[in-house]
Length: 372
Image (cartoon, rainbow, N blue to C red; front, side, top):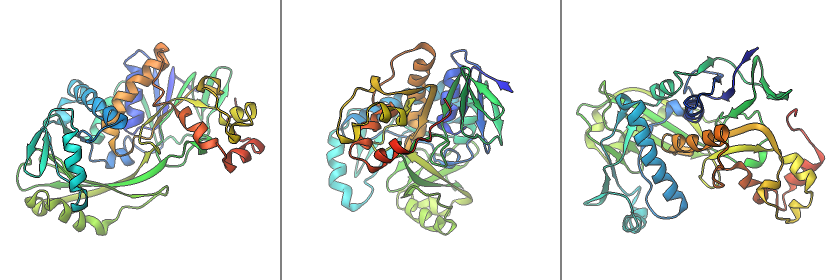
């Protein structure tokens, strides 16, 4: 049995950032990955680092996370970062008026450029190399499939691995937790790796995204589409369509040398805010408060939780922006006992999902939680 202070399941950007944040605080971390580091949606991401336009709590969160993440990447992976700003265009003719309204609401540094806006504090990063860099001080077990975790004698047991703390960050694919109530959804994304004929000096963002040229001469063309909670496959027939869309933003990209196409399912929450916190024991909470489906309100502190079991994920298409920021908050909660932000807590979904829910009534009759 391989023993650690903490186990992290999943080596995408979510698992990599929380493993790094814990390791940086002196925690001995073991990372379980059924494939290879960043082999799924994270490795297929364009890893664009750009702000969000508009107003509201989500916009403020994303832009605060961007500031933190850019500084973080400059410290640990400056050689993998291309920070040359982003030129943002409306996504379509139908969104031009919305784009103009959002431009008037921008609170961060930007420049108006004809029918676009330029954000100097933006960039892109090499996704796969970054995840590997984040995990260099952790024990990573590739090709190790995680079964349903079991808790015994103060330790979480996952196959041959054991630790008192467990963090599950396995993305939009098959879950090993009774988390039907989280209501995450999959958003399929694809990225073309290309070698442009000219140096690209900044990111271009519109209906599709183009990265500035990385060291080595490659660039990324990325798109997030095909929303749905199923496992899509890479659409090789879409290569030409993606390139043509990109050429509307940057004409010479159509002459770039195609290298390959990657794809993956990115998990997103229903409110677009990542999920980071203790995992509630939903079945026990329902047994303790069987009138929740009838509309009873209870504080999150009254919920039942699994001991030292955390979930971290649902970053959607902005994982490389939001993961370092939320990983830091979760690591502080795990190691130092800091109170984590309510906006990240998985428990925020319980009352809204359970209220007048047939699934919640059925869950009272069919308990299939973890061994605890």
